[in-house]
Image (cartoon, rainbow, N blue to C red; front, side):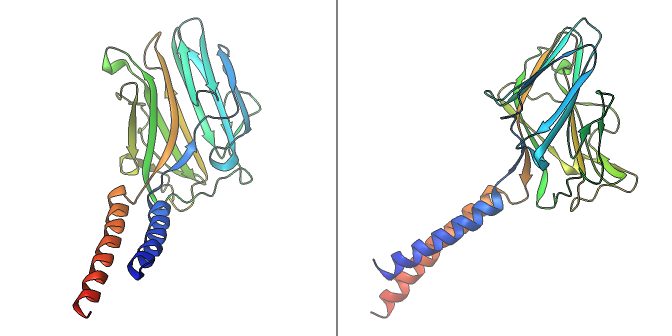
Length: 243
């Protein structure tokens, strides 16, 4: 093996490790465990250990208007789905547990995430089903994250429209959040929740992976790898010039 080849191999290994560590998104939840089917009314919920953020997932489901709604967490499909004859909504929480009333979430100092989000720019949602013909009637979403009693919300109190169609992704940057009570601290997020709404009477929606989006874009890692080629080419020129 030539010196250049050896050095290239070492550089590629090092840069690949660094690039991979920097650019990788982190999964908040992929819904690959803790399968459950919940019907409403009445409002119902559950919590269980999971591979999601903080090692625990808590949720509650309600159905407004209409006769019946069904929430399905299907680990085989990696999906969280709402089928409703009314307007169904599910809140999924991390750092929370299901409250004793069975239809709300509660967070304590013992359940807090203490998670560091400073290396990320926002959330990405995999949209598995969101097919309402009228785009204004598609899925709606509310997101809240907090540090102690202070927090940040991406909705300002009203659920936002997710008009991304089936088979796409929806990105929600932290810059879209508004703060309350002093604001959440990205270096110490204690509690995180997502509320998904079916959007309109009789609609069906489903989501897959929820991720934290890395602050280092993929192009940065590609630039690092390109640097390997430049170093190698420079080494060959140097050796040829003094041969």
